[in-house]
Image (cartoon, rainbow, N blue to C red; front, side):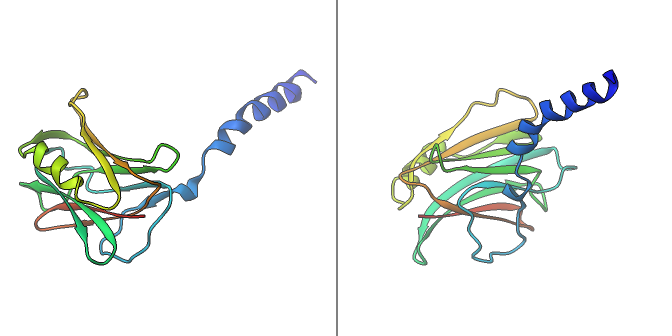
Length: 164
């Protein structure tokens, strides 16, 4: 009698964890632009085997088609390294995490100034590289935004389109 009761307690104790994990909120980054925007969730992509890479630029610009675009340029790679882009509408923020031994070689001030000219972005914060295996930055928005994420190769680029 004790075993089934213990098993039941174990199952009940894990229910909140199951309820909090929403598999549909995780998407694979696209290979081409499809105009499929999500209001929240996470996108992953890139190549897990690429670990030693240089971020040669983060370009930000408004697009006449009604969205803002963030482009992360990588040098010395045919494909982006593994990445995770998370859209958190409750905090009006998109967090970009790039995994691997990342070196940066671009002007963060240029990207920050470019963000001020967009419709959706209120701020860009480039975080110091605390972990040796990842680098992060955040995109703060003026209002909740929808995201579309895709990657391009040769040259390697991560593209994040933001739409109000």
